[in-house]
Length: 163
Image 1: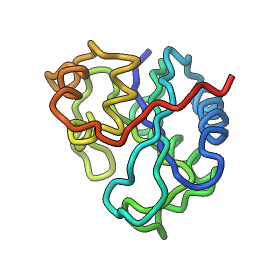
Image 2: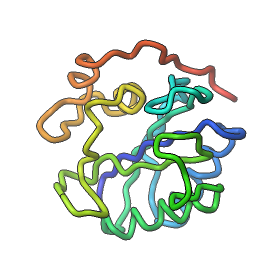
Image 3: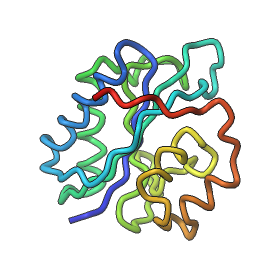
Image 4: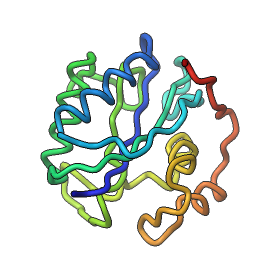
């Protein structure tokens, strides 16, 4: 079994409800066990600034799927929730974004998949929820909590639990 970190994001529709359903789909379609789930965070838009704030979260799962099969499944789940990667604006509005952040300690650099995620250490919107669930996890030689300390988390705030 591989220990995998996945980032969730979105800013179109009822994103928090989408997250709940998407996490259930991830676990079901990958036969994965959910190990940890961060809180949801409101985050400023990245890239294209003229859009609604995003909601971001991270999960940790255990799965026996290989990285490529997992990525394929994540893309199928995104499409199920209305994402069309072929026709969307880069960093634009979306219903659901699922990013494979880390897969055990695997390092890959292929056109279709780079592990760990190549922009992880630039993105507070991923590092904040990641630090909530795995602050001491070492990815590419860096502790998540240490990486978070090196970026600005301005404008990011934890949303109240829905329960």
